[in-house]
Length: 267
Image 1 (cartoon, rainbow, N blue to C red):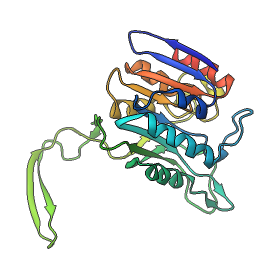
Image 2: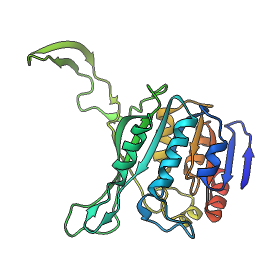
Image 3: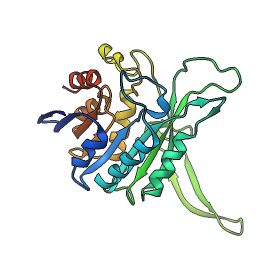
């Protein structure tokens, strides 16, 4: 195992080279505020000489993540499904339900909508999204909503109502609408070359998620000086976002070439 720890004014960084199934066991219980990661689901990408990621591997990791997560901590699990013999694998739902089985809450099922797609479909609509399951250990202790959705009725007064069991409506409140409101749980984020990141060398990794995606989840579910973990660090996107946003970061990566990419990006 190779480990690189660095202290700086914008958070501590601890990069671990090795198998997260083993390395997670060394992390103290109830010590992680937030996990932001995307596992190598359904073997949609080849990651050099790594062995296939099985559901048994996932279950072992899921249990460790639950153990090390603080009460009120959050996991953002970004995942999709392969198309096998003409139908989707369902791996994403299977993983989300297993997290629930081990005692975590499915706090929200969010959508990451991409700005493009790779190949045109011939017998289904174009696939342009991945799931972002937001899982919590009890009630989430942190939520900092991003308010950048422009309101169509800005400056107006609107009445909030609630439907009763008998079908009638009860007035709850009247409020003035501001220019911007809280986002929905569908995030449209640009991806692709020089949109996912402007770090040209990072594209040696075949499946990065956008820096903006990592930053926005870190802002939403953690506070400065919190500890954020990515057990499938890849090219270090989550770590780079943590340094920018003054969070402590622990990253684990099995592949040596990707670990070196992450070292370069995070430092």
